[in-house]
Image (cartoon, rainbow, N blue to C red; front, side, top):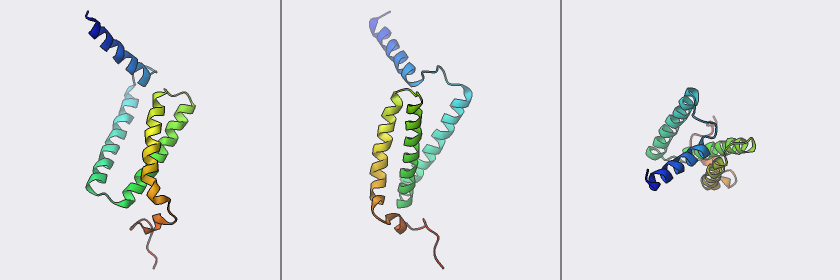
Length: 117
């Protein structure tokens, strides 16, 4: 067997072991991964077709939640590769939420608060 094939096979195995240290995923894990992927795809399409400020705010909040769960997973023994995803989530979360950091900026979003009579 050529050495390039052996190297490629070894690299794939190392990547697989880093991303899935518990072995192959069971059916329920695959189901939830596919469900989350579907939600992310629909949300992304909404963000592209209707780029409203409110959606940016909600996306930033979702990134903060994802980052929290990733940090929790890392603290409880998740694969170190999760740390890379955590850094990206935090970075984009800061970018998305920084416009909202100004005092009462979220109050100016149409449709966010109920209208007063």
